[in-house]
Image (cartoon, rainbow, N blue to C red; front, side, top):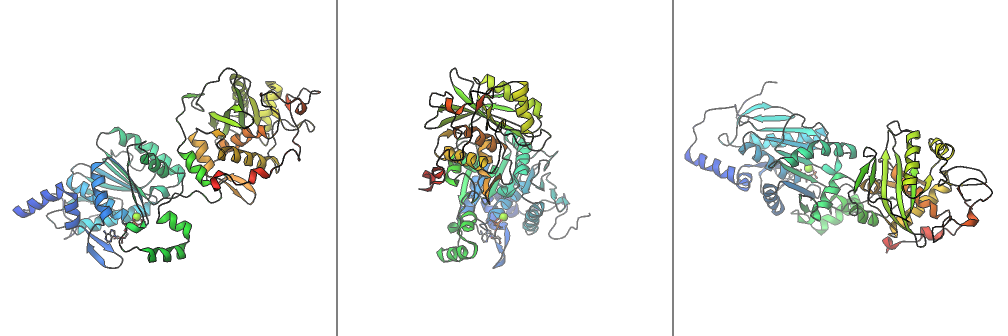
Length: 517
Ligand SMILES: Nc1ncnc2c1ncn2[C@@H]1O[C@H](COP(=O)(O)OP(=O)(O)OP(=O)(O)O)[C@@H](O)[C@H]1O
Ligand SMILES: [Mg+2]
């Protein structure tokens, strides 16, 4: 579409006679983004219409931080002027730095377009001698005649494909759906961070604990990444006092207020694992020490002589949907339970035969580890392979009477397994290291007596609860010997046990844990 040039949108490469004062102003604006913003930027406010930008104190600090740091992460309250301040910085950057590409992404393309509209409006209100001419002026991009470009997109993997970016702004990053954010990050972060000068600005209101934004923010706080963190909560915004807060709390509820205005990262309200415990777990993950099986296996420790291990297994079809998962747990002690997560297998393209082969191998590799494997669905085929083909006697079977191989996930077994896992994790009786397992726990919820991963897979969680279930079956004693009474010696069923309904008093599972104190 042809550009309508007028008093607001300047033609490219126009010859202008600059007065000495204008040249001096141009120099000042180029050197001092604060000066440019305060003197020349107009914003539109709800109450007063168009006004000159008079930055709040924290906006001044932010402009400084944006300028001095290559990586910035802002955790800001809703309606605190975050989009405004990053837009002003991006506009200044493009106007006064030739040949730069500035990319702006938001959770939705419509929000990104709105940001570009705001920036165009700011540009249009600059004096003619201060602004560059434009060669393109579209809904998703503006090209200046100094060779710099503003480009907007939704936050997707191919957001800026083909454009080497000098400055990228991610607005409302916590609201980008999980997979999309991961893909954007994987596609763009490596190039941005490998350049020596390009900048990345991330800013958002929080939206739960298990997303990249939360990860970047928490790591930035403890200096585990290069991002400069800066937080702005509701009471720093002029005009918001206790009376305002009480009204908002009454209108929107305390939980939403805490998230949107006090910038708290809230867990889902009904996660199986207590939110405080999840918060602690989030900072416990460690990079694996080895990868194997074409990166499907992550390991933190090799087998140790004399050590005892459990493999918790959750088989899937291997056709690209759900992943098959294995948790490798080292048993340090049985009473009290003390475990280390030392390995994780995860893949959605491993077929049931290869999966049983892998379980079999891992079981031998880890000193004849117990195999706790769910037998529902494709699990039956995996278990049959392990038992009949590989004749692996470390397979734990849940009922000698019914001759059922493996563990059946059903009304009584699954809740017990989940609750035991909850207790073990919340007690600190297991040291989890795998980031993906911890993230899956963050979305693993209970709803109407059902346990499942909300908007996230739960295959590693189920491998984990089947792994810990061995303790519920009461089949190993404190010397890691199988309890005779629990083994069916008349049969060749390997490690057999019955789950008796009155086996235990379950009340301890629901007792409050340290996380409730
Ligand atoms: N320094 C300022 N003085 C007065 N008004 C401001 C200032 N900064 C921003 N505003 C106005 O406050 C409103 C909210 O600003 P903005 O959209 O930038 O906030 P936000 O934090 O991105 O909001 P949201 O959470 O809705 O995305 C806008 O109307 C904007 O013009
Ligand atoms: Mg905004």
